[in-house]
Every structure is written in C-alpha cells, then in structure tokens.
Image 1 (cartoon, rainbow, N blue to C red):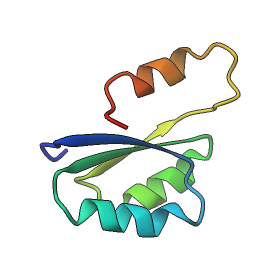
Image 2: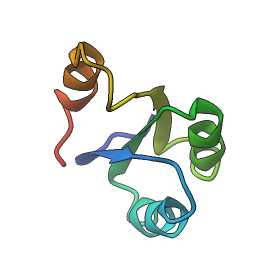
Image 3: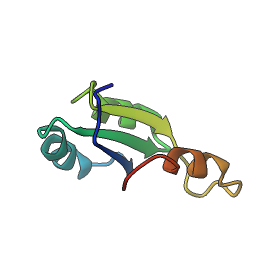
Image 4: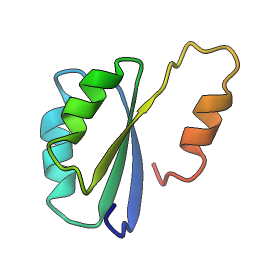
Length: 77
C-alpha cells in the first residue's frame, strides 16, 4: 500500500468507477478501498492500480452495520 494522504471509500465496482480510480490514482497520494458485495468485480477494479487500491466485501443492506462502520472508520471521504 502506498503512503496515502487521502483515503477514500468507493462503494460499488460497476462500470463507472474505472475512469474515476484512474484519475484519482494518477496523483500518487490516494488510497482507495473499494467496498462491494461483488468482491470479484472489486478485485478486478483494484488490479488496475494494486499499490493504491484494495477490495473489501461490503453489503450496504447488512442490518448489523458493523462491517460498514469498520470500513468507513478511517477514510477521509
């Protein structure tokens, strides 16, 4: 993982995030956590910039909200 000035949580790994992560990672000071219930799709997206990104399983409909709180706790945005 790169030393990041900005830590972002991106929820979802569909078609639109790829241009966004390409743009954000070119600055070199951003780490992006991709939270998705489609973990394989999130991993594919993270493979674009493996030193700047990581994938985590995240189901926003999970009633416990424990996982969401943990994933969101140390992110800037």
